[in-house]
Image 1 (cartoon, rainbow, N blue to C red):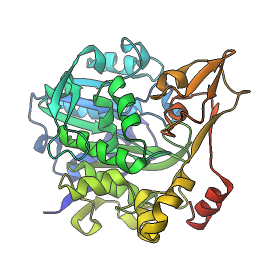
Image 2 (spheres, helix red, strand yellow):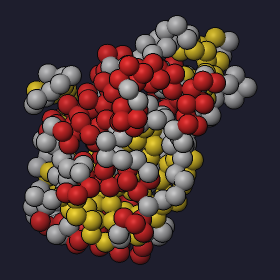
Image 3 (cartoon, rainbow, N blue to C red):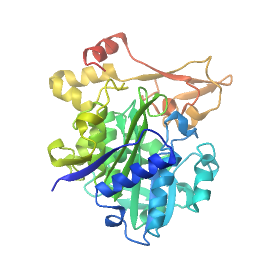
Image 4 (tube, rainbow, N blue to C red):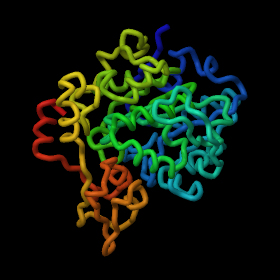
Length: 383
């Protein structure tokens, strides 16, 4: 059976535009009531990357987008919890983004997942993980609604619906997993293990203003003007990737999830409703790193590992821009970030190039570098 993904135009976060786009996308896939039962307990997983940032930077799922989804859920009488695991001891970290005020206005419970506790669950068919600790708020819900942001990612190439579920596990576990799975390929397979534990029932992707370049936090906002919706999160990712120039096999999370039967990535098995793909595709969408699948297809096996190593990005601190906030120090899973004289420094020998420091920096002080040979290869592959 084919998966159905709705692609709907939405040029801005203006209320009437969102009402038409979110409501229209849900109707195109059969209506919200066909997915979520009336009065259900619903967990809404937003992408709220720590540390806090304003929605205008296109780092997080825009709160106005989420607000419209919540309005639709409230029409069904759903008991709603909105959340993510953020580096804060309370919901204070949601103030800068506007989520705290928005959820209070909507009368919806907003939680930092660490406040609800975590329970260990097995990973069915896990290739990298046998079990993982998942938020109790997620496990206790009748339905999970996944609200990813359409963004590039400097480590995994793309971040969407599958990777968004990484936020339902404790921060400490995320640090540990970055250390245990230091390559993008292995890390992607691990993300799919986690996704298999908590597959969402419904995915709506905020592609109204996306992020291109060195995402997921240091890229550039790129107006795309689209909302994507579907029951199959993997299919939503595959369609989003197609729109911005990735193939279904280019990103490990998508290809691995499809291979394991967790969703559909085959373009021929996905029914697009709404805006045709030919009209939705974005030209010259800037990427941060070469996708693993692209390397595998174009290079002999003997050269694959060598070339991949030359293309990996490495972080370095721009001391003039460093504010000494320590966010990169807190985010580093392997102790490679040092604080000296009120500024950060990266120990290259200890660095595993997971780019968590780059993801955490909001001042542009952690830049990514590649060897001259790596840049030449990137140019050859039109990165």
